[in-house]
Amino acid sequence: MAPALSNPLLSDRVARSKKVPSSHVRAVGDRPDLANVDHESGAGIPLIDLKQLEGPGRRRVVEAIGSACENDGFFMVTNHGIPEAVVEGMLSVAREFFHLPESERLKCYSDDPKKAVRLSTSFNVRTEKVSNWRDFLRLHCYPLESFVDQWPSNPPAFRQVVGTYSTEARALALRLLEAISESLGLDRGHMVKAMGRHAQHMAVNYYPPCPQPELTYGLPGHKDPNAITLLLQDGVSGLQVQRDGRWVAVNPVPNALVINIGDQLQALSNDRYKSVNHRVIVNSASERISVPTFYCPSPDTVVAPADALVDDAHPRAYRPFTYQEYYEEFWKMGLQSASCLDRFRRIE
Image (tube, rainbow, N blue to C red; front, side, top):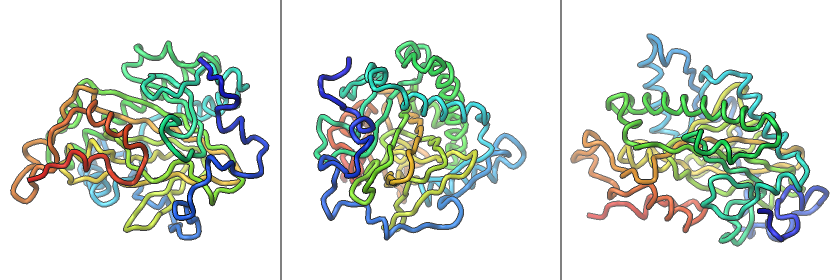
């Protein structure tokens, strides 16, 4: 149900604004400091070609994925298997949705983070003190048949196009989880089995042009609570990853997806692989659309590493916990640089 608040969505409030509203202005010490960002050549993070993942070069690709998970927490993949038409369709229908009339979009609005399908703004408007420069549509995607009828019916092709993309994204997530298992010296199917019945969410993010991007964030520094994230983005830069205390810009690469390790894989790998702090900055010139797919354990899954990853040199890092327990704690904390995982760290 649409809220009583007039213009609850950022894009409708600031369509003609030349100034960032005070609700979105960060304190001086908590601003992006855009002059001190490393802009490296290329992608800024490892770029891995998956063409040989199912071929004779699999071992080499698996080793590259393992190295990226251990050293960077982020990497890009090309030849990922999702057809270009499916990718372009997803970005197109996302843009079309956010360009619908306000009254049509607001049919999906909710500020309740527990809803399986909801349009909202910022991150959690119920608890945060400073808002973020983002509107988003949150969708539960797996099992697809349990949720697709709740998705927006406008644009008319939305359910079919997004359903196709989410199915393709899940297939890629499973392939990557198998490679990650192998890179840790585990059976190929270990990580897939370790996540129970599985869950999959998607956020369709819309970042409007911002008249003063130095004052606010699309999303502040945070770590993802899920297992693995697959990010589809348009050609507009915005994602930045923290490396050695500095922010590094991740430059979009045509036909590539950004992959990052979330907190659950850090726990399942017993800290071998790291969930890394990242943020989104905005710009004054153009809108930006991104579509992260969050692949997760099912809520009742007990998250614990394989025995093979625990030894004298690598004692058990966390107490066992369910994903439901973790996710509730994450929402209490909100987006921040401190990892929610620290709440579950085992103390000898």
